[in-house]
Image 1: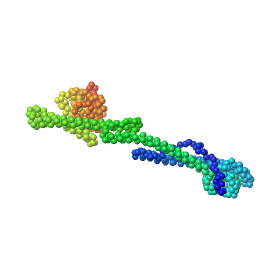
Image 2 (image 1 turned 180 degrees about the horizontal axis):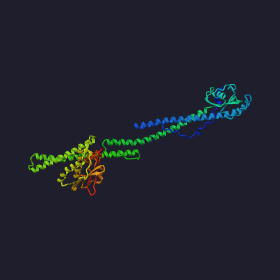
Image 3 (image 1 turned 45 degrees about the vertical axis):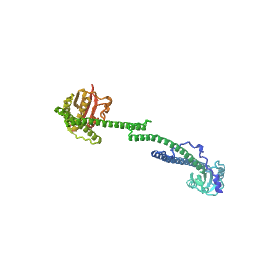
Image 4 (image 1 turned 180 degrees about the vertical axis):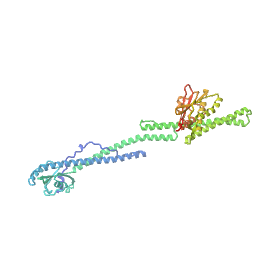
Length: 503
């Protein structure tokens, strides 16, 4: 009965704020676990996000609850400590026998005795007066009492009442007279109300955290969908391209990184489509180019074989056509083989010190008679100074010279004149081959060195000659520039680095 009576009468100190007084403070939490949408990546992304978020919620709620509990208990301790010290100070001028009457009056008039139990103890820790009931002679058990008596200063404690089992907070202040402890003023209050308040706080913060989790889950789902839906569209488009729908285009819906990805996919699709069409055109062109000389060779060979031509001049003419067309077939096959080596990385150079003037003059000499028979003038301007040796592959460079002269004949022969000049330009040898034909349309110039590109030209060829030449020149560390010359015609300018003596 005594324990039950003390449990009923001892109430918590009413300093904990009411629920409506709690600060409206949002905990930085993220969404709860939600059912993942279709799609393994989307589901895994959402579950991982929510798992991390759930940990953040738990840590935030726990930290906030512990901080609030620490705040309430420290506030109660400070309040009890202040009240006990103030009361003990009132009795410092009294002896043990004289301060009891004043203590009884103080206890009876204590305004907060419904929330705080006031105990007046003797120097041995025995209860002399209590604000709850008459428990005189009982021992006040608590480390704060013994510490206050031995250290002669206020001591506090958070523990459990051994009689009631309640969590309590206590503060003991010694009454010192002539440097001797003659008694102790002890303030005690229960933590039941604080614990109930903490349960409400945990419930409120957990509810807020749950709401935030749900909201963040919705936001995360929207964000994931906004990211993955364009990825799905890109994936579907890529599958269509892989299935052969070259040139298909996607709608660009944003200017962010996803928009850049869409642009890249669209550009890739167009380039694949262009490459596919170029390859088809190349196969068609090569087939036509091979068929034409083969038809001439087969026709004249059958004619000569059947003895239909008996005149020596006609036989010689037919044999000349066969030889000429066979040589053209050989050049085309060599170009194709050369291009195949470049594409597969098997292109090699046999570099050695060479006289670039001698190699160029050999090519000019070879084509001069050929041009003369076609009524085409080949003008060669010799270099006035002696050029040093350069490092290069003589056969490959001669192949470049012959290819450029052959292009000048096919595309610019209508101008009646081809000019070749060579000279030194700083640390480079500059070789220029110009025809006086119609030139190249300006819109085609940027693509003229692309493989398989023939543009609007009707001249025969595979469309890879200039691509091969450009690769050979680049392998020598030089440059090949194709442009329209002032006054008409096309000019090919080839620049090669000079080998510096002693380098």
